[in-house]
Length: 218
Image: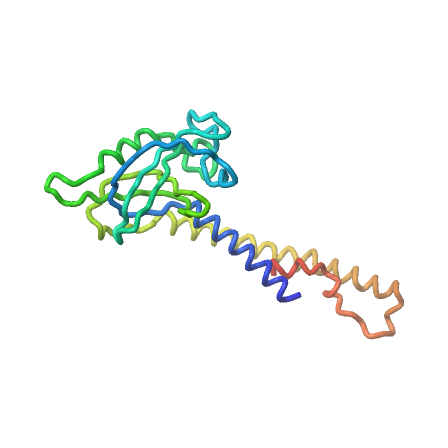
């Protein structure tokens, strides 16, 4: 049962970490090479695209989507989609898709002195060629250079707050279980033993009758 409890904990932890990694903003330093619009037919990967009622889109099966083609500092290509999130999830409340596409187009090419124009794209989501999904750009701005250092202050503060909230809830759950659930479970186990006439035999540990799922949150 211990292995089962740890397996449940591991699965829950991976789900939470995956959700945070997909949802929290990330920053890439890239050089933009092209911007375009393409009609997308949605299928089983529609979970990874903005909902059809975001912005002005209403087509349930396909619609036009903005894209931004870039190359990262290591010369690997990266393509971003540019969609409104509207009032849905994740809560970026993005309604400026057209303006962002214009800013991205303005950063194509080189600077006035001939140097490569680098840009910082903030985004969320994943790029997966097999599933044909793309990260969604939420903002773009000129970068000071390919070595610009970006500190994710928002992510750090949010993760600290989430960790504090989780710890506070866990402490309260442990106290509640110790004060209410465990005594009741032991009393129930004792009554069960007495009812079956097990008083003269080797007693089974009362905690053994407490539902195993308890251990997942212990």
